[in-house]
Length: 108
Image 1 (cartoon, helix red, strand yellow):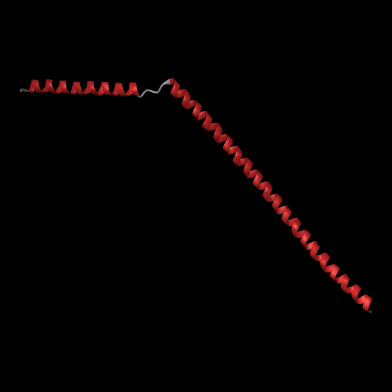
Image 2 (cartoon, helix red, strand yellow):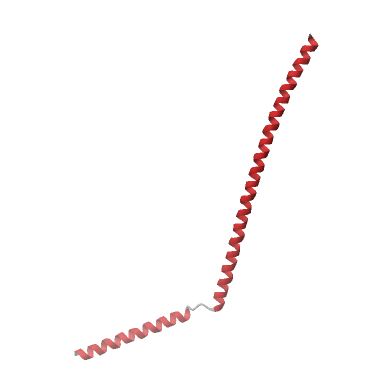
């Protein structure tokens, strides 16, 4: 095999490898192509996901606002309870003092 035959044989092998690679690439592209229906379905799914995320964000915001309102209401109720308990304690003390005064007045 002389130099010219070797170059021709190498060129033929490289050309065959190129053709096989090109055909393989074309077949893979042909079979893995995404159809228009699939793209439309993906768009619908993306829109549904976006809507679901917006709804979730709105729900989280509502829950945070509601939690803040309830926490504030609880704090106010606890403050009112403490004030009522203090008033009751003062009233009991005053009632005991009046009973003692009445008992001392009746004995004396």
